[in-house]
Amino acid sequence: MAYANPVLDVSDEALEEPPTDDNEQAQLEDIEIRSPSTLSPDPLPTSPESTESIQTYDLNNVLEAAGFGRYHIFFMIVLGMMSFADAAEIFMASVILKDMKCDFNLTPVQEAIIPAIVFFFYAIGSIVAGKLSDVYGRKKILLIGMIVLVISALLSAFVPSFWLFIACRGVTGFTIGANYGVSVVYFTEIVPVKHRSSAMLGMELFWTIGSVFECLVGMAVMMKYGWRAQVGITVVPCIFALVLLPFCDESARYYAISGQHDKALQVCTKICSRNRRKLPEGELKVSIEDRGSMSAVFSPEYLRHSIILILIFFINMYHVFAIVILLPDVLLNNYCSASSFLGKETNAKGCEILSKGDYEMLLVSALLSVPGFFLGTVVVEKLGRKKSFVFTALIQIICFCMALPCWGTWFLYLALAAMIISSTTFNQILWIYTPESYPTYIRNTAVGTLNALGKLGAASGTFIIETLDAKDIRGSLGTFIAFGFILVAATLLLKKETRNQALQDTREQQAGLTYATLQDSRI
Image (tube, helix red, strand yellow):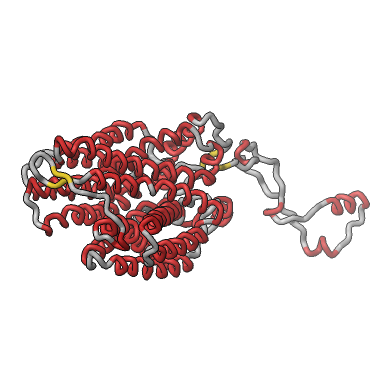
């Protein structure tokens, strides 16, 4: 319907001559001269959407409304089994190396290649999978990774030559690197704010269980059946994880930033339904972003943060992996008169294999990570992420210094245990903080890149400790202490605090803008 705007046509003469008739005067006084834009014609029929603002909610509102329940427990079991499988595959190299040395007549260089090839391809897999999972989704990349992992791990048990085994282990290392970082981010994205640290504790405990599983299988299998049986049994947890993974949903955050609104809403509805909670009223708000950009990780707004985290990841991995190498050196080389309980054993072929003492040492090392995980979970909630970093980095230095003086065998063991616990605590905090500090559109790309560069620290740690004089334990401790002070300085430079902060999905959210503000700015 068209509305005509009345126009008052009054000549100059009419304005100059006052009306003589009283009725005409009254009519003129009642006339309101208005511009066309201020006229108020009869209102058009309106729909409820035009008269009432639509209530909206985002993914963080959904997760807080859903709480932590059955949906998350199932996810934790499935992704935890992937962590279990990854730990078993990595730990396996320590268990089978001596038996393989006998079978293939390995040289010292070939022995060193086995863990090195896993680290190298782990780093590549972490970077590649991080970017691809931001572009194509978390679940797809994990499924592909687990399928390849199962195939390569099974082939490792049957290869006839050392170099074919190395090829299979390279592929296995690639998939382990691909799976771990993606699974941590995948789980972090579906957990409510107040449950993130405790949920990550569950994930890390599966890693410990995987390490313990590998030790127990080694004690039962290696003596009678050899390394091929050990490799074959280690694949079983991988198969179990692969069977369960298809029952998990894709990350709703990935769906949201990739413009798949209906699928994101479907996942949100399922989370609330499984947890027996009500979905927030209104319309789910999503925003499309370009995903998986490596340049965005090192863009001006993230450059400083990313460089600091690279340094922290490098030193953290150096400490965690080098301590595992240092522990047997202490026991085998009689440091501070510490008596060795490792001993030697041979199999039916007369080859030296891990002794009961070796397995006990590996079990203790794995189990000591448990108090570290619990401590990290408590500290990170009480002090916040940044203060927890500084606190645990300082504790690490103290623990390293405890091993310098020779104050008796048991005090040395106590110092070594404290080193493992403090390093595990720091590692736990790092894996909670890092996914929180990047938005969804580059989260996996950032975590994968940092994790990959951190593995350079792991490789450096094992290399430096191995090349130092085996009896010069103080030299090894000196590198720990020096890196410890650098670690404290790096953690002090971090600016972002993520405790009690909702995960951000887009550039605009990361900048602190709300959806309402954005909509207002576009009108």
